[in-house]
Image (tube, rainbow, N blue to C red; front, top):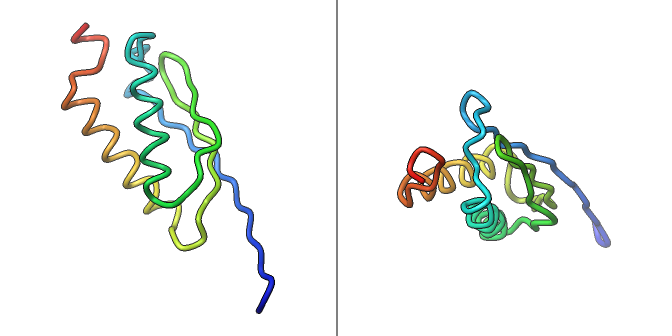
Length: 93
C-alpha cells in the first residue's frame, strides 16, 4: 500500500529496585541522557525522558521495525550496564 503512515507512541517506566530513592540530582542528567541516546540508537524517536528519585519515564515514538520487547531489552540492558560500570548510584556517592 502506498501512502502508509504509522504513529505509535509508547510510555515506558523504569523503576529502581525496591523503589528506593537512588537517583540523585548529580547523576540524574547522566542517566536521562544515556537512556535518551539509547532509544535514538535503536531508530526510535525520543520525545522526552524525565523522572524522580525512584523511577524514570520515557515517552518515545516507536519505529515499526522494532518490537517493544527488543527496544526495552536494549535500553534496560545498556543503561543498567552504564550505571553499574560508572558506579552511578546513591550508595557510591
